[in-house]
Amino acid sequence: MEGEFVKVRKRALERLTTEVMQMHDILPKILNGDIIENFQKLDAVEAIVEKKDLELEQLRMDCEHYKARFEAAQADCMKERKGKITAIQQLHEAKQQLLQQAEYCTEMGAAVCTLLWSVSSNEDAVKTILGSSKAVKFFNIAGQTMESFVRSLTEDMKQQDLDSDESQFVLGLAGIITNVAALACGREFLINSSQVLLDTTMQLLGDMKPGCCTKLKVLMLMSLYNVSINVKGLNYISESAGFFPLLWWLLNDPDPEVCLQVLRLLQSVILEPEILTKSAPEMRDSLPLPRILMLSKSRNADLQILAQELLEDLKVLDCEK
Image 1 (cartoon, rainbow, N blue to C red):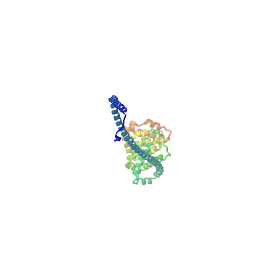
Image 2 (cartoon, helix red, strand yellow):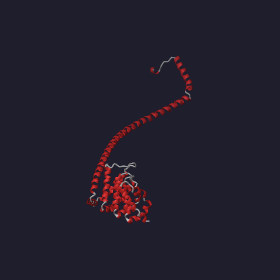
Image 3 (tube, rainbow, N blue to C red):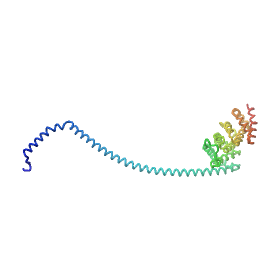
Image 4 (tube, helix red, strand yellow):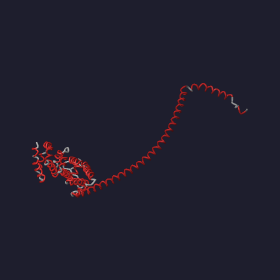
């Protein structure tokens, strides 16, 4: 068929044949081992590139996934931050409310205790107080409150603000205890039911620095002196560990009223023969006579007289040897 044949000039066919034979001779020289190896390497590189493309696509998908998770976490973080800010504001408001309540309670406590201090000078009122089922709890709380107050004093604090509600609150409590201890029924109650309060009082007297909270010290010492009027009370106080070292420590206080109350308490011990007999050895070994001699020359008339009387009373210690 005519469509299956092409007419070519003989000269063109010969030229084509010549070129094919030349290519047949040249190709083996061109297509040597290096080129074949390079083609193989190219195939390997193309395979690696294809693999890397797949890995890159996977990384791109992972990145999108983690980006979505990050955005979700960021949204949660913002939500939590807003919640935290709200919580901090609420906490601040709660602290302010608590502070206001504490100030109110302290102010109310100061007013109530000051009034009760005044009322407790009446014997019938004290009997009514002691007859209450809450009496023991009241005196336990009073001791804890005074302890908390003393613990809050800084090391370098010499004078507490006596006009503050907190100070008035504590002074009121100490005054109530002093008035209660001034009555026979009150002394019996404190000795039998509130020995922890007596222990706390002596401990706090030793914790307060010289010149610090002198009014509170005086009231505490007065309450101990009132308790010492009862022989059982004096016996309990004088047998407490560190009682006499406490008195010697307090005698160094620069306030004359504090020293006066210490000497009164010491005189109670000396004037009770049974207690003196048990305490004489310890007193002889540690008695600060130079300090008492100095107080006997004080410009404060009451302190001077009491110190001179005590020096006379102390002569009995020589008889106890």
